Length: 84
Image 1 (cartoon, rainbow, N blue to C red):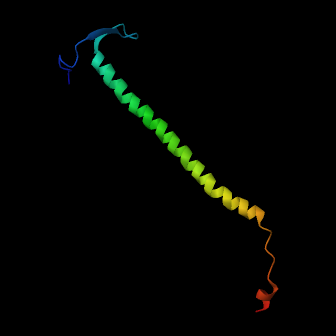
Image 2 (image 1 turned 60 degrees about the vertical axis):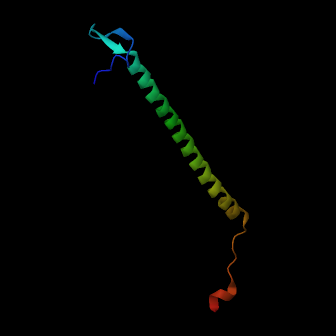
Image 3 (image 1 turned 90 degrees about the horizontal axis):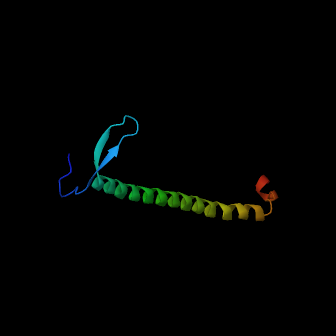
């Protein structure tokens, strides 16, 4: 689909470095691409933060129980429970 004249007021010639061909690209298209890239980058950043928070929550849950196990003396066998 071609951009309408109102959507693309300014066209820039662009040279293709590989083939030497030139073509016309719309500034509006570049603006749209940058608008798409920004939310993607933000989503990636937020996803990374969420993963880090999940890991922190896991460690916060695991560490207290590990500390408790380390602090408790080993259980002594109850002599009454054997023969009863």
